[in-house]
Amino acid sequence: MADEVVLLGTWASMFAMRVRIALAEKGVEYEYKEENLSNKSPLLLQMNPIHKKIPVLIHNGKPITESAIIVQYIDEFWNHKPLFLPSHPYQRAQARFWLHYIDHKVYDTWRKIWLSKGEKHEAGKKELISIFRQLEETLSDKDFYGGDTFGFVDLGLIPFYSWFYTFETYGNFKMEAECPKLVAWAKRCMQRETVSKLFLMRRSIFGKRVGIALAEKGVTYEFKEEDLSNKSPLLLQMNPVRKMIPVLIHNGKAICESAIIVQYIDEVWNHTAPLLPSDPYQRAQAKFWVDFIDKKVYDSWRKMWLSKGEEHEAGKKELISNFKLLEETLSDKSFYGGDTFGYLDIGLIPFSSWFYTYEVFGDFKMEVECPKLVAWAKRCMQRETVSNSLPDEKLP
Image (tube, rainbow, N blue to C red; front, side, top):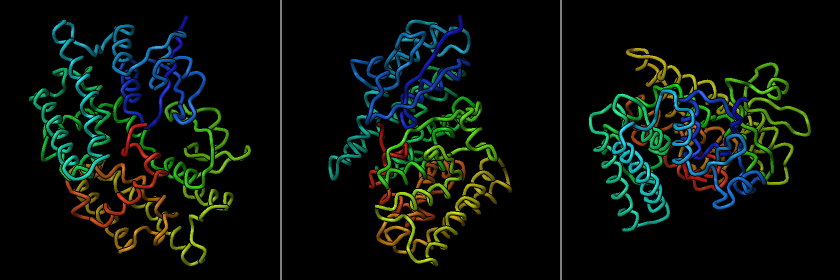
């Protein structure tokens, strides 16, 4: 009988991401169930009655909890190559030690920076840099923590890569300056399809727009995660033309394309502060700039990411130019809507979770090129509707 494998997680959880990478590395097919941690499912409470947390791997009806334990279980049960843990007991113990170190040091120290100011903030920043330097020293000159092979510690640490830009922004330091070997290691990890595919799935910019808009309007909804390599019958039925996400299904009717969905949300749930301006010209301008973002920012990033040499440099210049235009449009306003967070802010803010990736692949600094845009992103991230919807602000 085939194994029945179910994973309970959330898109923003780095600990669930570990498990998903491990399952992908082993080629294990599984059903993924997205959890709403503000309204935990009966299945989660049944399968993890002690901590009531994700991730939970349910294998043939039996739950395994805690991400590090789950990854070890996956390695032991599906014991074909690649093996995550070394064969020697001492090396296995060392790998487990470093993952324990990551779990107990990186996250706790980051929270210290995030929740404090003044001397405590500075102390937390120094401690976090010290932790990453220790991890870099442990990596040494190896390609991966497992030597030539991507293994247990690599699996444990790589999800934190999506937080590097946030660490830098709140800590006012540069990861590449402090830990260049660690950044180079992250780039090598990102070349693995098992890693890069999940990072891209996790960062569906267009889906995040819709999530923020719904949160701004206080709309309760059911979120269904899509595996774009194996699209669901529901997605194919609801978006037969493009077969893409996001799709908002409202009373059985499908609305497609993120910008159109956000406009629809603003029109249907019009009891709260509007996302679009009331003036027709200003509405047209807001729509123009979101269209500019969709056609220019995303395309120039892909050009930079997928090319080398002169074409890479051209893509980089084009991307920076696009961001500078957007910064010029923002001017000295707090938000693109003036004093109010609105349609254009929702259209652009999900791209902030890619700022660090743009910097690493383009070899430039967003704060140097577009300081007002970075300051705007920080203001947006202070909104609960944004910080709860984007993965780079905090863990669930």
